[in-house]
Image 1 (cartoon, rainbow, N blue to C red):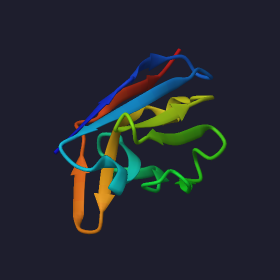
Image 2 (spheres, helix red, strand yellow):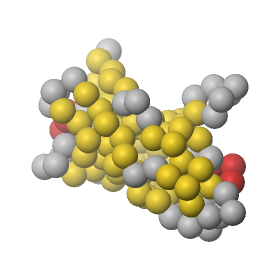
Image 3 (cartoon, helix red, strand yellow):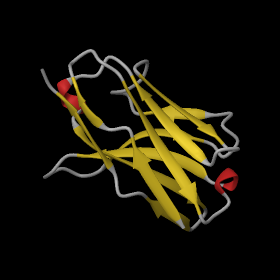
Length: 115
């Protein structure tokens, strides 16, 4: 079972990035997907959630109306579109797959928002 994030990088404030999370080794379409982020010295925090079918989503308050989570079950990939990025969005972003007691994490991708 594997999750691989990509799409991170350095972006100016107000810019956009799209993160991808490619899954393999498990039935991706049966798992809800989440994005979390972590800053050194702080706890990992929830960013966004999408159900296995993609019908329902949820977001942390600090990213609502700026970030959009989506998935393509045919491609075994989840996405996080991030717009209007702020310096405080700088973090390592992780994707997470969850189904009951089964849970997988990726290695993360760094997002740095700076001028």
